[in-house]
Image 1 (cartoon, rainbow, N blue to C red):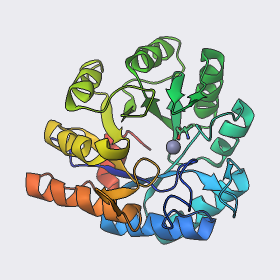
Image 2 (cartoon, rainbow, N blue to C red; image 1 turned 90 degrees about the vertical axis):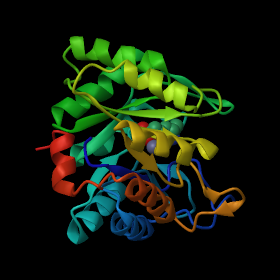
Image 3 (cartoon, rainbow, N blue to C red; image 1 turned 135 degrees about the vertical axis):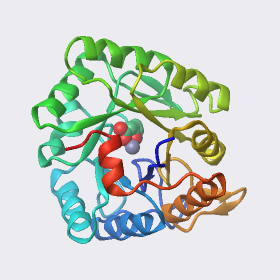
Length: 270
Ligand code: KMH
Ligand code: ZN
């Protein structure tokens, strides 16, 4: 099995300070939290940015501050979100890709997202994929449902996505695909040879799916974007505590954590 890559999704666009006081908002807070996650074993940070009051943003200036802060202090891989927040348009979502982070997300379909819809019609997906290609940024394909894997493979045939690709299965989102081990097993069974995958379980699905991924050769994403609790009723003091929990499971399972160099090789990053 490959060494385990842990991605820390440290703030997302939706989690608020009313839900947890531990969610970072400002670039300085995001960088500090990213470095704590790196120290806990994360090889990549999945970045969203916020205005100082927590309003979701896709400001290239804010993304740039986070990228520079992380890169000046560590070799942690930086992945930008192009998903942003529900309702954002393609130009806003994909603008910061020009800063050339190590990776950026690419959601390949629409999904009910709680009471909202995370809309990703094909022309928008193609535009973001094209933008990633233009700037040489490798996508992580966010698949909230099975059709999104099929669509990614279709985009590969169109030349917009390079195979083998790296996928993130986002499971357990209210309105989306369920978050059991069976759901994950089906998703990973759909991938062509040599593709790599990680799982992001939402809410209570986060840690059980992480454990299943560790046992089955996948990789793991955890963090306050997806789940704010370390255990039932106990808030995580930061995404780093969730990374620590995953690192402990990996250690018990005898699966080493990937170094940045190993992660670059696994993800085929230059
Ligand atoms: N905030 C969600 C609407 C991504 O980062 O690429 C979309 C999202 C996916 O978080
Ligand atoms: Zn995200």
